[in-house]
Amino acid sequence: MPAHGHTSPLLAVSADLAARGHEVVFLGGSRFAAAAERAGARFVALPAGADFDDRDLDASFPGRSSLPPGPERIAFDVRHVFVDPIPAQYRALLALLAEFPADAVVADAFLQGALPLALARPRSERPALISLGVTPAMLPSVDTAPFGLALPPLPGEEGRARNRALQEEADRRGEPLRAYAEKVYEGLGVRLPEGPRGRAAVTVPDHFLQLTVPGFEYPRSDAPEGFRLIGALPGLVGAEQPLPSWWDELTDGRPVVVVTQGTLANADLGELVAPAVTALAERDVLVVAATGRPGGPGALAELLGGALPGNVRAVGYVPFDRLLPHTDVLVSNGGYGGVQTALRYGVPLVVAGASEDKPEVAARVQWSGVGLDLRTGRPAAAEVGAAVDRVLAEGRFRERARALGAELAAYRPFDTIAELVESAGR
Image (cartoon, rainbow, N blue to C red; front, side, top):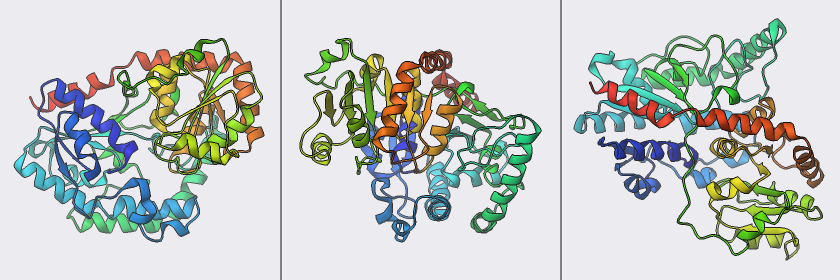
């Protein structure tokens, strides 16, 4: 999919496969052409019917901006962002394979135009299809509530009864979208297998690799055989990025709290960064506000009346691989990759996210014991301050984060993907 959070993991996989000597072609959003080439891949752009700029979805998809975050916008996105491009994606993939007969197709699980490849032909007549789960697992299960409700598992028969009732309601509400998707696939000459909406994305590929570890994903007793948790991809190393002048302050003895809204959902720093900075201004902590965009520090200062509090250091970009080892708490809006990068370094979290998959990420943060979910995308300053105080004071959050860091370190996701690719070519 031509979105940053979906593209970055696939670029990392491409770079690893290219470094192992494989010939890699990257089919993706046009704005990622240079990044794909830096990864060592030949780049092919998605056609206009499947390409868009995720930095301004409202401009790419008229009518989206009038819908509030929640079920209506999710339904809009499923139909227009994910389903409508399927024919263009599939045709682009077929055209590419006609001139580049690959042994394997490694696809972002949201690029649903890859599924007809496996539905239309037996495995002996096509490349292996390997799907990567780059968001929290959406696989329906008797053990989980439907994706999107951000409800953690409830044990026992009480939980299963709750899940059945919620899934039935979700299926009823989602039937128009399922019927719409079925017609799109039928137009390509294939049929989706029967089952709850969302299960085909996991069961149709030859392999479905979820980019996380068991400690950060809900258990599913009924998961299909091809569904595997393979660990999270390492974050990009920023060794060449210059360090800010205040870097030595990270080791002056004060707890370090990093606040970020990531690299995409940061147009309005008043959602999370400003409330967090306000809440922590009077505390004996060093606050690093990573705004994720040029001009972010100035925009933050303007939101706060023209000046930053004395204990705050604001930056546009900062090498997180070097910052996180000095961090005591990460306050985040819940990007899936960013949260797991924090856990890789044993950093506990406070998460406030409301868009895309972020509520599901936040729910897993609290369920796994590595931090707190504020259950809103725009928390009050007092809420953020109280949550940070609690995470700093209660060592159990740090202990669980370190335990998940050790679990993440035990996995070798690049090796797993490469082994499947190489076995497909034998």
